[in-house]
Amino acid sequence: MGGYLVRRLLLTIPVLLGVATLVFALIHLVPGDPAQAMLGEGASQEEIQRLRTSLGLDRPLLTQYTGFLGGLVRGDLGTSFRYNTPVTQQIMSRLGNTAKLALAAMLVAILFAVPLGIIAAVFRGRAPDHVAMTMALAGISMPNFWLGPLLAILFAVYLGWLPVSGTGSLAHLVLPAATLGAALSAILARMTRASLLEELRELYVLAARARGLSGARAVLRHAFRNSLIPVVTIIGLQFGAVLTGTIITETIFAWPGLGRLLIQAINFRDYPLVQGCILFIAVTYVLMNLLTDLTYGLLDPRIRYE
View 1: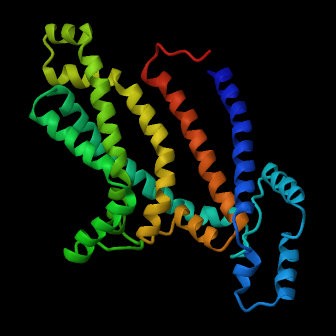
View 2: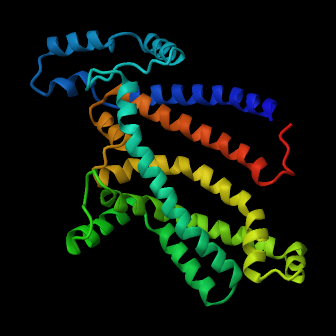
View 3: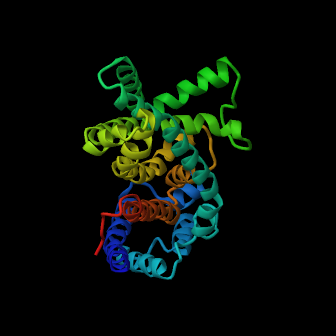
């Protein structure tokens, strides 16, 4: 296990370096001058040039790139152009809200998807199976940018049951979490069904029933546990998708998280803040993949990493 962990951590270094390089290149190729955006259209060329010099934007791109990589090695993501504070401080101030939203979305997805997948597998080819898979198909067909406003109009504007935007209570979390968890629950339900169907065909399930176990115990205690590895894979991989999905969802519901911070940084051409947000999401995605791989051994002792 130790050797596997070290190898995986070493393999993440070139991945993160490639992400950092790609982000740096794309950000600097985007049209627009951050100094002009910060000072406004009425600023003179002298004022713009002075600000560019103070921000280091007049230096050659290679010099800016090496300085950027040097900062990453030291754990310094730079200073935000807009807020004039360390990028790390801005990310940490929004991270709690994004983590809360992502975990709530994952919880919504698991609570809906796993029972749907189990019901669909147990009643394969019958009415409950068709209903569950129709619901899953509907969930995966609705993008966040369409489902979010629809839920806001229905539950906040027409019915008045939930707040339409902002944060402050659990009620504010319901609509963003449901929007973000809908697509994930659809994927997870289909994977749960497919994985459980494979296990239900195995002889050990029939043997468990022959020993006197009820159908529910044979499914939940034996077949479902052995079908969890593909399900855990989807959950782990989709957690990164949930983080990227927060960019749209947080913007729709004015949720003060990392995704909304990234959109604001892009609008203001805040290069260090954009780079820091994207790198943070990339690192989280890589670490979630590693955690998913390590979880395999806990679920299935037959898996060996060495």
